[in-house]
Image 1 (cartoon, rainbow, N blue to C red):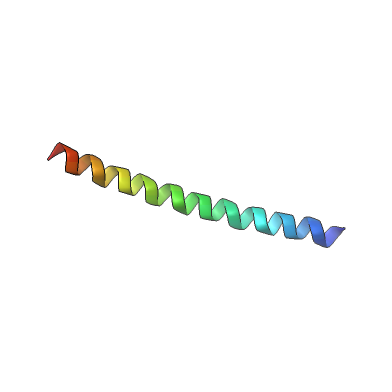
Image 2 (image 1 turned 90 degrees about the horizontal axis):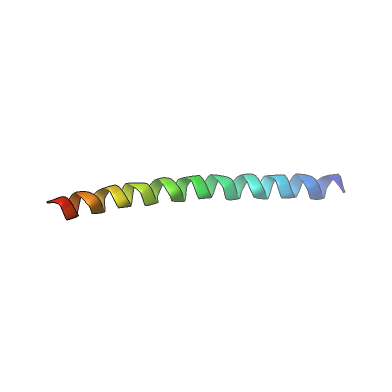
Length: 39
């Protein structure tokens, strides 16, 4: 039982980290796009 909880926590942590990185990359992409549109 305990190992299952640990696995869930670990997977959740990994997913959260990927979400954060993806969001950051997406924001960078949007910033670049707005610069292109302005010019």
